[in-house]
Image (cartoon, rainbow, N blue to C red; front, side, top):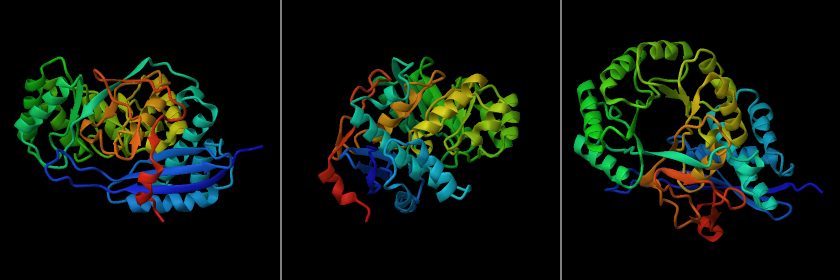
Length: 369
C-alpha cells in the first residue's frame, strides 16, 4: 500500500536584529510533512529578503496540490511546481517553496527506511565535507573589526573565509584596504574569497578584480547579476581570479549557458532553493565542463547545513561548502543534532533522514495558520 502525504504545515521563525551581534538572525521557513504511515519529515525553504511571508503562502498553496499524493515521489514536487502550479513560469520563490516540501519528504523517506538521505541518493564520494566561514555582517565593519573576526574563525579551525569588502558602498581604496587587513591578519595560507553581491557593473567588476589581484583570492563571487553569461565570460577573460555565480539560479536550464560558454569556474546553487534532485542534476551537468560546485547555504546552520551535507556528499566535483559560524546556534532551542564543523570540515551524517530532530512543542509557536 502506498504511503501518502496527509499533512503539510509551514513554520516561520522570525528574524531578530540582535543589537550588538555581528549579524542579525534571518527569518527561517520550515515545512513539516506527515504521511499516512505516521512518519514525519522536516524541510527548509531558502528565504529571500522581505519575502518570508510570501514563501509560507506559496507553500500552503502548493501543498493543496500535493496532499494525498505518494510520499515517496519527491521528483514530482518540482514538476508540479513548474507545470501545474507555476504554469511553466515559476520563479525563485516557487522553487524555494517546492524545495522545502521536497526536502521534508526526503527526511521522512530516510526515516521510514532507517537510512541517511545521501545513501538513498546513491551514497557518498566524499569522506568529509570542507567548509568555509562566511563572516558576513549586516552592519558596516571597519578594517580592524573584519580582521579580528577573520582571525577568530581561523583560530576556531576554518582554513577558508569569505567576506564583503564592498557591500557597504566602500570606495575602491576602502575595499582594498579591508581586504589587505584581512589577508595580513590571517596570513597567506588561509583561503580568502570575496563576494561582490551583484552590486557591480561589468566594468566596475573588472576594476575591482584587478585591484584585488595581490591578495590571491580563491574566487570572486557574484560580480553582477547572473543574467548574462556572455558578459561573465568576457569578465573571466579579463581577470585572474576564478568567478563564481549560482545562488540566484534554481534550475538546470538557468545554468546551461553558463556552462556552455565556460563563463565561470565555480557555481553555488542553494539546495533549499533547488531541492536535492535538482542540485544533484546541476552538479552532474557542471562536471564535464570542469566547473566546481561550492554549495550556497544562507539557511539555518541546523537543518540547512544538514541538507547541504546530504546534497554535497555524492558530488564528485565538490568545492567548499558555505557555513555561517555567527548563525550556528540560532535554533538550538528548537532542534538538536545539528552538525558542527571541526577543523573546517563536516563529518558525514549517519542518522536516518536528514538527521536533525525538531521539538514539535517548541516549534508550535511558529506554526503558520
